[in-house]
Length: 142
Image (tube, rainbow, N blue to C red; front, top):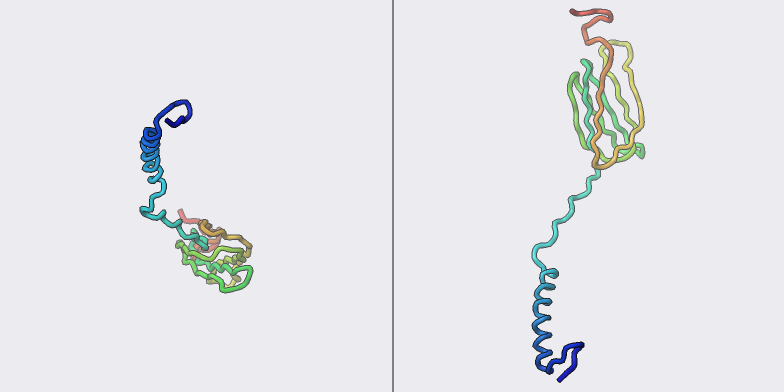
């Protein structure tokens, strides 16, 4: 007889007990090493920012976003009371917004810098206190 810990069993009985205990262990461990379906791939990383510009005024605007590092600029003319959406490469930009006036009073332009991060949505509204086209300053309509 072989002595196994605190229980004394004949050698053949010890092997039978080992088999009884090891077979379920192997079957349970086999479930952890399955090769069924591979895990789904993570979604691809986006390298663009989503830009939404809403024109609340009755005048058209032009927006230009030029990469600070150089390269092609994104430009859009936004009609009165319209909006534009675009996906542009993420990065640092110099943005220029110009109010397009039909009068010969010059076109007011505002320039600013912005960092557009990948995967983010940026929304801004364009508005002015100038009268609508065809309206004279000081006219009040009731």
